Length: 238
Image 1 (cartoon, rainbow, N blue to C red):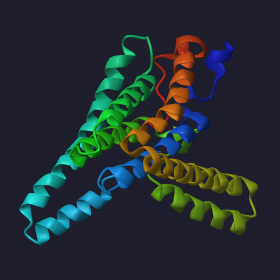
Image 2 (cartoon, one colour; image 1 turned 90 degrees about the vertical axis):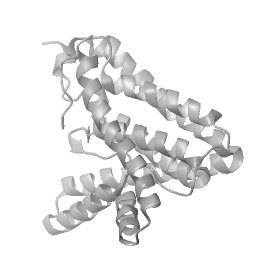
Image 3 (cartoon, rainbow, N blue to C red; image 1 turned 45 degrees about the horizontal axis):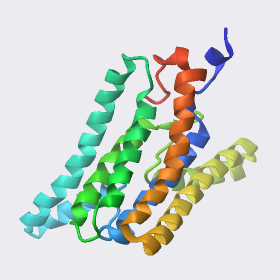
């Protein structure tokens, strides 16, 4: 058995890959809030609450509008599920790698959108790519992950903190530290985004290209070299 086939996790499942994407998730949140309408587009819970409130108050125009970002998020999941199956048949690169390239192209385009343009253009684009990222990258070294929002990581910090104290088990403390580290990276991404967007306005989104490019090159090298014979292997969690 070769070294490649002995790898427990694919490169798209390694913690450093998800760490970069956690940082990017925080960056996207800071970007849309800072310069694209003062809202968060990484997840859809708030939009569903606003939808319910709009329906309850009879604001049908707002209710119809909120269906747009929700639909964009829905389509992101549909596209990522469909594309993953299609891309695998070509045995060239993995869908995970292609998705990062797509994200880079979207980020590049977003930076060219004038600050005077309707915020909805950028918001829907971020909704779409965050949905695909969330659906595609699901585990880091076997640990369930969400790279576009923090709720589960906060819960896991609390869970493993309690278990670590109760059972005096260092493994629980390590798991707590893992999730806390991911939260820190998300915050770091948001901080970077706030600084970049304050200085460069809408073009500040281009700073997200740095972690995305590093991730893309790492995954591309794995596809073409170290994991070339594992293109049919399905990442854990899928």
